[in-house]
Image (cartoon, rainbow, N blue to C red; front, top):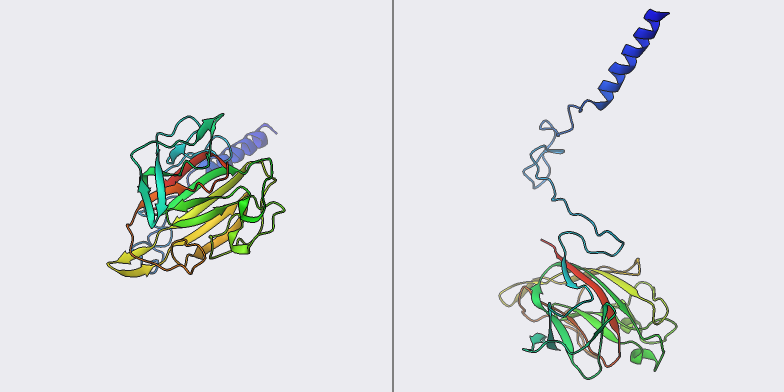
Amino acid sequence: MRDMRLLLLSTVCIVSFAQNKPAADDKGFTDTPMLPGLPFHVHDPARPHPPVVTPGAQPGGAPSDAIVLFNGSDFSKWSAAKLGNGVTLAASAPTWKLENGFMEVVPGKGDIATKEKFGDVQLHIEWAAPSEVRGNSQSRGNSGVFLQGRYEVQVLDSFDNITYADGQAGAVYGQWPPLANAARKPGEWQTYDILFEAPKFEGEKLVKPAYLTVIFNGVVVQNHREAMGPTVYRAVAKYVPQPAEDSLALQNHGNPVRYRNIWIRRLN
């Protein structure tokens, strides 16, 4: 009986060691086919590993490699600006309201834009339309997030608010309506997570248009949507040559919209 117990114990130890011992294929293979167009085998051990990025401590928080554009305390990353064909930065700081961890549009005080310029990015931004509903259609909580100061993702109080489809919250303004109206009630915080691929030019020639993916309060409302060109009002958009990088801008449309928790990641 004692010998049998020792045998069983030895067997358990051997099995346990085998389960914890690194497998021969942990680091990959070099006897597998080559991946099309790449200098790597399937499961190639020489293929570079992705960098470690630590997620934000809370949902919606900035990951470790993000550039925090607004943390609720100051406008150090921002400038007063004017939107037109791109962004014109002013020499002065923004004069929007700053309080309680958010910034608020002040009617008549102009647009704002980042001092730093960007190309392909992942953007997280939170916004809230006024809790007191005034006006209707495009007069309710109207603002806009302008990638490269040109491509607008519409900000609007779209909760129980009838307006034209390509002007709703989450629209690529004037071009593509959102796939769904995911708006929360006015006064509540809304979230946009945006993937933006900047257009590419070779001289005067457009070789790749801009693309936008927009997740609105956890709902995909633009799915790798091709932009027709920079945003224009009551006209058809068209591309003109532009810099590879430009500022992120927030529009002052005369409504006291609030913004908070803005961060961005460059995408190579």
